[in-house]
Image (cartoon, rainbow, N blue to C red; front, top):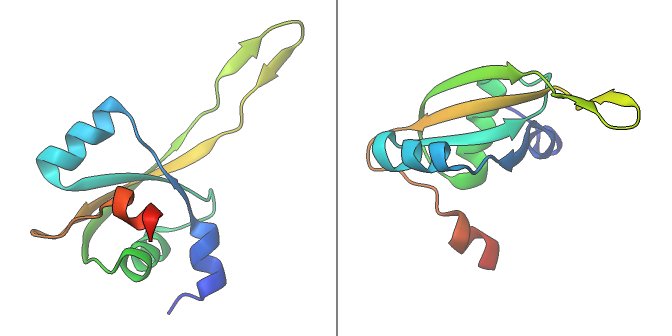
Length: 100
């Protein structure tokens, strides 16, 4: 069992884009930005406990930060994303979660 403190550190934010919105509608997949040191079992447990849903599968990938060249060259930090597939009939409604 994962502690409540670790749950809050594993999931950083939902990643919302046009592509992730289509994935949510078609395949029941939700995309999250997660901590770089989080593993699949921690992500699954955190999503199930926070949103009271059942998770079927978790896929992760580390996204490399972009190089930026302004006055001085710099680099954005790397980040990790998790694609969480929910079991059939499950759904996460972020709009109602923010209100209550």
